[in-house]
Image 1: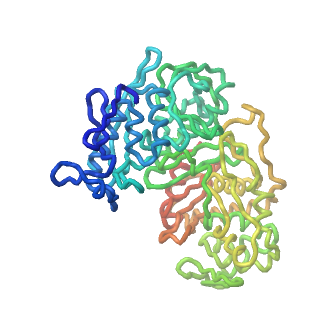
Image 2 (image 1 turned 90 degrees about the vertical axis):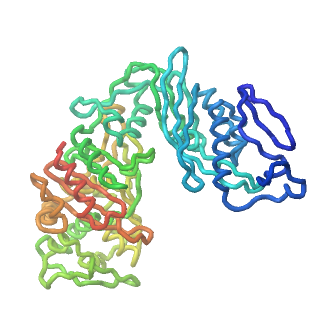
Length: 545
């Protein structure tokens, strides 16, 4: 037992004591009857309690756990969890490896079986100390074999950012800190730009040792996966940070941060078409998993940019040529409809179908394509989707698998097995803007001489011109007009709505460009593309970059 804890058996009860403070009493034979003091007989106590813990049990268990944890007694605290062997080393490392002491835990009112709380503590290491404060919560459950009320063990009980197998540590940092700057030399911090937190941690892990800095003393979370970056929590002594140049633009990043905060779940990325430089990346909420760069979802009708490029390249349509747009169309076993079963009059152009996001105009042309792999080839050969992008941080680089029949039809309108994130869609828009795929980057290639992905061919100028014409129409009078009304310059757009796993409200997707900046956004369950994601893209494009 740590911290002078003593064990005694009193009247059949197991009592943990440290520093004169009792953490609670738990019968070795069973729970007390709670009716008139005294103890249970062996036969009575052998009856294991079932059902949810009572409010009294929740309060008693959480208090006992908090008191043991605050006193630094990992063994005592772990005994009050449903995973003693998993909890004890993590709780022990709190004081031993992270050097966190003077712990004060203040619980809030329980909500059902969940107990929220705040932690205020002090980190002390080699004569240096800093305060540490955060909030988390725990859940009290019924033990499966004992029937006792126990803390449901998760690493987040100790710290909300702690993951399975990760450890808290304090000492000389494993990698020197960095000072990341935007393209104009403005310093980028996670405090001012919260969405950049995971990105800055990754850049530090990759480039800290070669950026000319020296290590300081910090408290950090060291993940179980060595490929993942450490998460710095507190800096006790600053080392000398090394400078790392990024392609980001502080103005565009600030706009992106503001825009995504207007929604519960939203992501946006901005890319410079002429170079591939990433100008902004933002997510709400901010998590270690960067949804904007690593997410995988169906992008809905925003993918029609790519489908249109393929159809134009094959000479099956022209921007000003006629294109049928009936309310629905059947392809093999799948019937695909337009939103609200709208249709366009006979003689309407392909530009009108694109600008109004007519699904059926695209599906009716599949037989003429006569190649189930055509869209997958277009994705890879022209738009660089599925290649191994080396942006400088971890990304998912999109996927358009080869499909047949109804599944192929769904892909034409960005559904089915197509998987994208907003980085991918911003890049697709950037490629359509110039005709040539330029792999997105967040740090210059010269920083580490990494090999960038290259597509095997570019679009011919006539196709580029027609794609831009159709996207301009979408922004001027099509489905993107309302969202893009405030955006200046030479501008274009494409909206999208994507249903995932039968959700009631579709995800809102939007992508657009203004001059030499392209951006894409998704708002989860945001509905129509122009309603939610559109204003996010517009705000970033207005900021320029």
